[in-house]
Image (tube, rainbow, N blue to C red; front, side, top):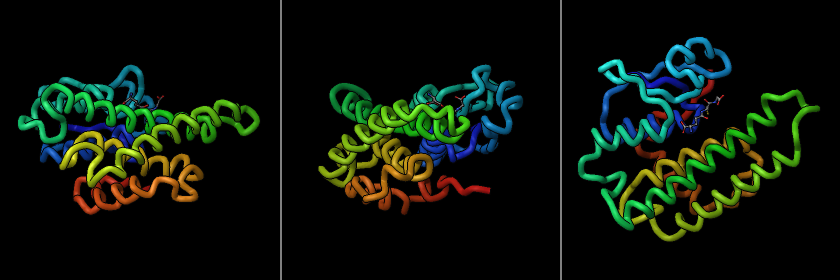
Length: 205
Ligand SMILES: N[C@@H](CCC(=O)N[C@@H](CS)C(=O)NCC(=O)O)C(=O)O
């Protein structure tokens, strides 16, 4: 399988973490939407990352669809995502908050980083930063309740939370300045001792 995109993207990184946690072999093609739009367009008409090209040649786009497939083929015991019922809903709920934090943090960094300064809409930045903080606050509350966000082992919820927090540390660093999410920061530190997280940390250059 070929994963398209760089781990700077939280959506790409969370996909890479899941691939590694499930021991699914893959190679990564580190294309960036800013520099390699023409190449990415050949794979995904919406020109976004991640995409996952399967051995069959099929191409999956969007990290949610990709991870849905990876769980189907690689997580038969439902370790990362419970099979059904309240447990599954709880993990998906927390995972969606983590994914939402990624989306809002990416929106904030695009608004500030990709526009000429005079065209940055400060009110919009304030709004998406507030949404990012709202999500991080909810994840902090869940992280403060135990070693994992939900239950007694690592799930998709933890993967998303860790990747989202670390992306905020890159793209919206000022939101973490006074270390306002200590339990989440501790979860990040613990998870980063696992190879799946450590090996996917974005390294510029
Ligand atoms: N919902 C998508 C979001 C993917 C996404 O926004 N990726 C960013 C990179 S961080 C991207 O491709 N941005 C370029 C664009 O949207 O134009 C997912 O979960 O995969």
